[in-house]
Amino acid sequence: PLPDRPIAAMKARVWIRQGQLSVVLAWAREQCLSPDDDLSYLREFEHLTLARVHIARYRNDRDESAIRGGLRLLDRLYQAASAAGRTGSVIEVLLLQALAHHAQGTTLSAITALERALTLAEPEGYVRLFVEEGEEMRLLVLDFRLWIEKHKPESYQKIIAYTDRLQAAFALATVPQSAVSTRSEQ
Image (cartoon, rainbow, N blue to C red):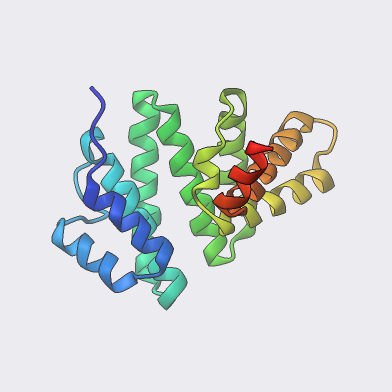
């Protein structure tokens, strides 16, 4: 069975994108969510949202306990998703790990997590999962592409092509909807 995406957690993701950190922190407290919770597939969406909260809190306040808690939660979510063979969840966790490491300035760890995510995502053609993470992910994918070209150009042609596809999708995501509908009508 597929769990429903809780509306409150979906709202929390919007609030994170809007920078409403106090509202998001209140949501997490109200839901009694913690990085040390027992994990279940039915609450995975909420826990992935909580990890995003911790990353946002670190970006905003440079709170080391927030990023440590977020990374600890992501490690646990990765283990659970891997053990259950949920590739989509594994990719999402790896994306969040990459963003967390990038926020900390640990570039090699960010690149490593993103490389693993891209390697899993490319054969399945994942795009939306990356694009929904926004500008930080766009910049990280761009940095990764430049890093790959410099360090492993011959063996990573499929990944380079995939990063180009993602960059094109990021560009489309930033075009105002009215411009998209005007172009599609022509």
